[in-house]
Amino acid sequence: MHMIGAVHTSYIKNNAIHQSNNRAVAIHGTRYLRIINNHAFEAKGHNIFIEDAVETHNIITHNLITKVMRSMSLLNVD
Image 1 (tube, one colour):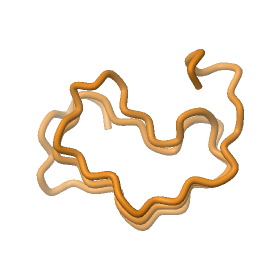
Image 2 (cartoon, helix red, strand yellow; image 1 turned 120 degrees about the vertical axis):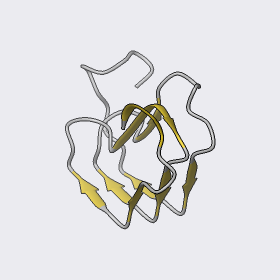
Image 3 (cartoon, helix red, strand yellow; image 1 turned 90 degrees about the horizontal axis):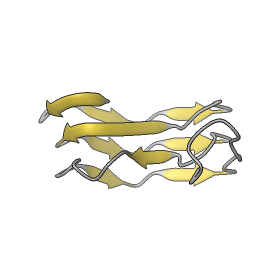
Image 4 (cartoon, one colour; image 1 turned 90 degrees about the vertical axis):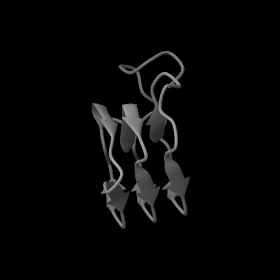
Protein backbone atom coordinates (compact mmCIF):
# COMPACT_ATOMS: atom_id res chain seq x y z
CA MET A 1 0.00 0.00 0.00
CA HIS A 2 1.94 3.00 -1.23
CA MET A 3 0.82 6.63 -1.03
CA ILE A 4 -2.89 5.92 -1.48
CA GLY A 5 -4.24 8.11 1.33
CA ALA A 6 -7.48 7.22 3.12
CA VAL A 7 -8.77 3.70 2.42
CA HIS A 8 -11.79 3.36 4.72
CA THR A 9 -13.02 0.10 3.15
CA SER A 10 -9.66 -1.59 2.36
CA TYR A 11 -8.04 -4.40 4.30
CA ILE A 12 -5.36 -7.08 4.20
CA LYS A 13 -7.05 -9.99 5.93
CA ASN A 14 -6.65 -13.77 6.39
CA ASN A 15 -3.53 -14.21 4.25
CA ALA A 16 -0.59 -16.58 4.48
CA ILE A 17 2.63 -14.99 3.28
CA HIS A 18 5.52 -17.42 3.26
CA GLN A 19 9.13 -17.54 2.10
CA SER A 20 9.03 -13.96 0.84
CA ASN A 21 12.22 -12.33 -0.36
CA ASN A 22 10.98 -9.06 1.08
CA ARG A 23 8.63 -7.81 3.80
CA ALA A 24 5.18 -9.31 4.24
CA VAL A 25 3.30 -5.97 4.33
CA ALA A 26 4.56 -2.42 3.83
CA ILE A 27 2.39 0.65 4.22
CA HIS A 28 3.41 4.19 3.30
CA GLY A 29 1.21 7.27 3.21
CA THR A 30 -1.89 5.20 3.88
CA ARG A 31 -4.61 5.79 6.48
CA TYR A 32 -7.48 3.66 7.84
CA LEU A 33 -6.11 0.37 6.49
CA ARG A 34 -6.93 -2.81 8.44
CA ILE A 35 -4.28 -5.55 8.63
CA ILE A 36 -6.01 -8.45 10.40
CA ASN A 37 -5.51 -12.21 10.91
CA ASN A 38 -2.49 -12.70 8.65
CA HIS A 39 0.42 -15.09 9.06
CA ALA A 40 3.89 -14.30 7.73
CA PHE A 41 6.47 -17.10 7.75
CA GLU A 42 10.10 -16.76 6.60
CA ALA A 43 9.69 -13.22 5.27
CA LYS A 44 12.67 -10.87 5.34
CA GLY A 45 13.20 -7.74 7.44
CA HIS A 46 10.42 -5.93 9.26
CA ASN A 47 7.48 -8.10 8.34
CA ILE A 48 4.83 -5.42 8.90
CA PHE A 49 6.61 -2.23 7.93
CA ILE A 50 5.25 1.27 8.57
CA GLU A 51 7.39 3.50 6.41
CA ASP A 52 7.69 7.02 7.86
CA ALA A 53 5.10 7.61 10.61
CA VAL A 54 2.56 9.59 8.56
CA GLU A 55 0.46 6.43 8.43
CA THR A 56 -2.36 7.05 10.91
CA HIS A 57 -5.59 5.34 12.00
CA ASN A 58 -4.46 1.95 10.71
CA ILE A 59 -5.48 -1.18 12.62
CA ILE A 60 -2.89 -3.95 12.88
CA THR A 61 -4.25 -6.81 14.98
CA HIS A 62 -4.23 -10.60 15.37
CA ASN A 63 -1.29 -11.21 13.02
CA LEU A 64 1.30 -13.94 13.53
CA ILE A 65 4.89 -13.40 12.38
CA THR A 66 7.21 -16.42 12.61
CA LYS A 67 10.80 -17.15 11.61
CA VAL A 68 11.84 -13.68 10.49
CA MET A 69 14.72 -13.88 8.02
CA ARG A 70 17.72 -11.53 7.88
CA SER A 71 17.98 -9.27 4.86
CA MET A 72 21.12 -7.99 3.20
CA SER A 73 19.33 -5.84 0.62
CA LEU A 74 16.65 -3.91 2.55
CA LEU A 75 17.20 -1.00 4.95
CA ASN A 76 19.96 -1.27 7.54
CA VAL A 77 17.35 -1.50 10.31
CA ASP A 78 15.87 -4.61 8.69
